[in-house]
Image 1 (cartoon, rainbow, N blue to C red):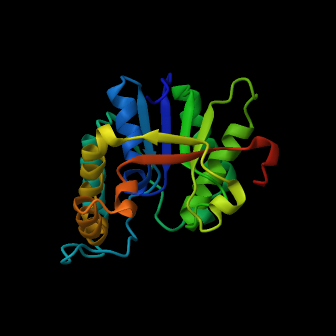
Image 2: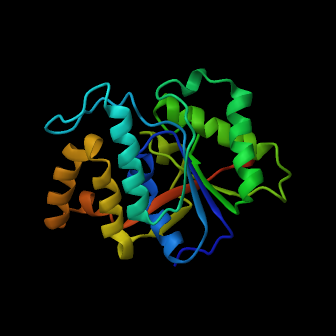
Amino acid sequence: MIEQERHVLVIFPHPDDEAFGVSGTITSYIKQGTPLTYACLTLGEMGRNLGKPAFATRETLPEIRRKELIKAAEAMGIQDLRMMGLRDKTLEFEDDTQMKNMVKDLIDELNPSLVISFYPGYAVHPDHEATARAVVRALRDMKPEDRPKFHAVAFANNTEEELGQPDVVNDIQAVQEEKLKAMRAHISQTARMLEMLEEGIKAKDPEAMKWVTNERFYTYNWDQDQVK
């Protein structure tokens, strides 16, 4: 059973970031009746994939990904979806203070007891890392007693070597179909992976089953905070 929260705030830079990593957890919170807000910073308009077979163009992809994001949110049951309007693949160049304040404004408005995003230094993509840093900066400015929990997704190759085993493992088997629906919603980007994943699930392949069995998070270590 996933722990009850007052309000959960999920912050990721791209449509489909939530589907791969946390859609089972999101669905589980919503099914428990926990208020949840998903702030998606960009529309992923610079995504490299255009569908399989291709059905998007560089000009049409932003609107397609916007619609896919809405469809994914519906699959998870999200009612409070925020599209924050930043540009894909440019977050590392955004003003640090403005990025931090954007996160701070969301926290001030929603008063979440839990924030979910990426773990700085272990999120691989520059947009992921910029998002993670903004979340840490906003949370760090808060008094420790007022600071919500921060559950972070980390998937760099050296994650377990340096961070150890995940601190939080959520069993999502009861909502695996909702997770697959969220992933299918982002079909312009996920078609190739879904083919392999769904074949693996049918064959009970252990690597494939991991995707629909549990979702793993690290609690941020404020004593070792190195974000500047």
